[in-house]
Image (tube, rainbow, N blue to C red):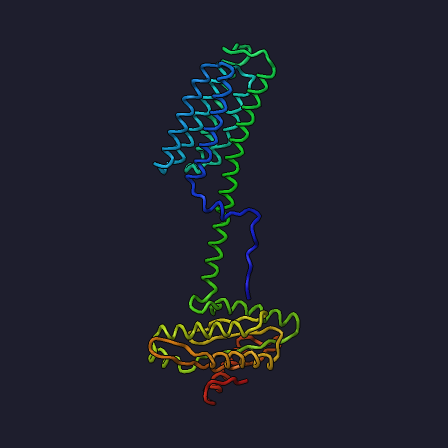
Amino acid sequence: MSSKRKTADINIMRFDKMNRRKVYAIGDLSLLGGHVLYLITFGILGVMPMLAVDIAAIIFYLVLLYILYKTPRRTSLVIVTLMEIVLHACMGIVFMGWQLGFPMFMLFIMPIPFYMPLRKVWLPYVCSMVPLSVYVVMRVFFGPPHEPVYIFHDPFINNLVYFLNVALGAIMLLYCSSIYMFSRELMQYKLTAKNESLQKLATIDPLTQLFNRRAMSEYLKLVQHNSLRTGKGYAVGLGDIDDFKKINDTYGHEAGDEALKQAAGMIAKAVPSEGYAARWGGEEFLFVIPAADISEGVDVAEKIRSSIMSRELKTENGNFRITITIGVSHGEAGDDIEKVISRADKQLYRGKDLGKNTVSS
């Protein structure tokens, strides 16, 4: 049996390879680029106080980019960045007025603390209240009818600054939202991969990569249930590597492990896709084929026996071959599957008594 993982719509693994410093650096460079646009705009308009603010902001983001690669405390840097954005918005309101879109920055950044990995549950709410409080204060003291220092009567200039503010604010919020979305998807991907890994550890024998006994017991219940539902029987085979202790004693335990892996691979190849195979314990293997009669079970068992016998294993202590004896039984709908396995076990020991390297049914 094989399983396929559904392909995600988003290529999460590409994001996974991007370390968090690079992600934060993209945000820093985006803000740096935005302030360069402001610098050009305010330079053309001759708004000298805002020009000075943006020169300081550009220096700030360059320093921040340097610090980003020197400290692991990236959350603190984000908080400092939000403070700079609030300060920039306040300066814009004071010098250029309420109507040009600067207050929107304080509204844009309100959701951002909820995207941040803050340790306390209440911290995002507190951090969000800061720009809201500043917004209210600025509205009271610098809202209409307050006259800004620089007034532009040309609607084109007013619209230009307004849409620049809206565009940069929207890009900033979109960036933070995208990081949050990718981080969430990445976390979900990692949790899914972890769960699948744990499930594999719980169901797969690490040496042979076949199902372990616990997992096989669950599949046997499923086979028994389906047999009752369909009225069709099933074939069970129980095999044991012959004289396995001698292999370990003569060629070493590593050779014995290799023998088990080789045998498991040939068993998995011989059992049809609708069947199940497991390492039942030690050097014992069990397979079950749903909706099959005894002859089909014997045919599969014979394929396993002959392929194992024909394989020569090479070790430092010499080359050798292994053989397997397999007992096969058939279960009808309504049979106790444990008793069916017990019958296969009896056939296995009968095969051992007949000289090993045989299939008994």
